[in-house]
Each structure stands twice: as structure tokens, then as C-alpha cells.
Length: 183
Image (spheres, helix red, strand yellow):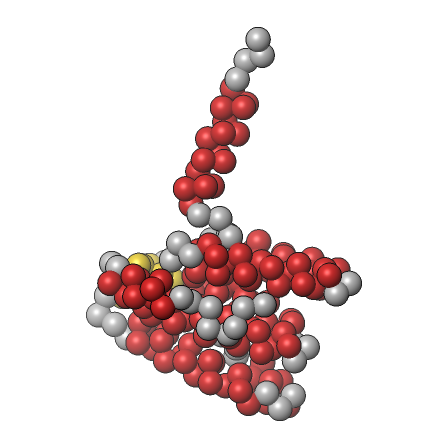
């Protein structure tokens, strides 16, 4: 699989200048809770703490920003592309470490969150890398784990390895096929 930092430098530079995106802080900034971190420490995976701290730092930066509003019990804040890119990279890195240590259950939400952020940033290449983790599980004969992994990805809104324009084209083609008359 790809190295822990999958975001290409030119991609990150482009998104640092882009207009901020409105994000739901709770669902976007997925990380490990205290109980999960204790399990990680028990396994001796202190290296996971670095990305988790970075996720918390980016979350604090965005959540404490001036452009936040509460809507129906949810905190919506403006986040720059650079912040979101860093967030997704840290989520992916932590997920990779957890998976390699045999803690796939803990890695799934992080993979799904990173996938959704990469897709939101219109970076389907990195989102596809995450979907490929499931293929790796299948090739290793870990079919139930692959099913659980794909279920986590499908369950995360926006987690898609396809560009939005490709999805719209697919929808349009399906509609044309449905309405076409046979000659």
C-alpha cells in the first residue's frame, strides 16, 4: 500500500488556497476515544499517538475558529483544504498503523473518515487507495474482515473512490438507458 503520507504536495498546495469548506466537526474529525487509546497503549503502539494528537490539534483549530455555527445540535465549521488534507492524512496514517498491528476494528472508522475527506477534497486517488485495503484483506483470505471493512466505507457518507462528475455521468447514463425506447 501507499506510504503513510499519501497526499501529494501539489494537491496539498492547491487546497491550501481553496475556499474553506463547511464541515460537521463531529463526523469529520473521527479519531480514537480514551478507551480505544488505552487498547492501543496496551498493544505498545505509542506511534499511533502522534497522528491522534495531530487530528485533535486540527480539530481544535477548526472548532475554535470564528466561522462556526450550531445547527440542530451539530457544530458546523469552515475548514481550509489544507486543514482537511492534513486531517485525512493523519487519519489514514493512524489507520494504517492500527491495521498492521492487527487492530482492524479500530482502524475502520479512521479509514472511512479519511476516505470521505479525500473524496470531499476531490482526491479520488487517495480514496481509492483506502478502498484497496479491502482488496488486500480479500487476497489474504480475510473475507469477513473485508466485508466489515467495505461496510464501514459504504456507511460513511461521501466515501467514494470516484470523482463527483463521474458519478453524475453514471447517473445520467443510467437514466438515459431507463428512458430509451427499443427500435
